[in-house]
Image (cartoon, rainbow, N blue to C red; front, side):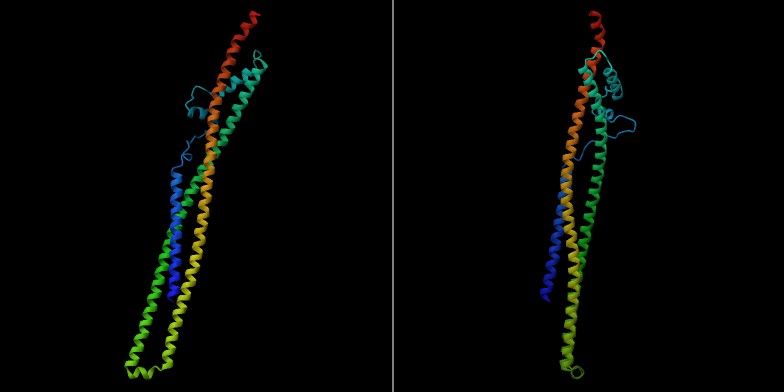
Length: 275
């Protein structure tokens, strides 16, 4: 009996250690998310009917560029006969790049929205892990109380049996009522009842511990997957930020090309008259 009780206590202690490990991993994940600067990106909401590139330029403080007007001017410059073939090709390429940039920004917005939803899902799963940890603590406390109560009942029955036997030896009537065979039968019944109670407790506790251990292992695997996923999202967000910066520089370069084309168009007739 003492061996089984010791084993059950060891299993309960192992489950508590696993619970503490799960709690530590959750706290570590919360700390890593808190210190992660890549997750705190700036939200840019695209309005239907407006150019995503226009909104991004205004967000970056570039308010003197109107994308729709810039597209029209690029179309006009592309049809300008005074430009050389090379300059016309540059203008056409610039307009194509701007169009692709708008589509790319739309895809980036969709990706960022997906990342935000994923972060909300991670928070929900984290809350679920915390609730499961709380349930596990309550279950462990309940099983410990049940084990203590069963052990207390066994001690009480043993005391009652001992008291009965003592009174039997002291009184003649009890000796007449309970024979030696009856006393042995009583001892055997109590012993059998003790074994049955301990066996049932052991089976229930073992089943609960197995289920909780599987839950803890699943939680640990899930936390590891979330950590890997967060690292991947950090890299993707960093790549998106680099692409956004690249498009910001590209817009400035295309404005210079447009201005040069306009100057050439103004001076073109003068050159023709001189010739």
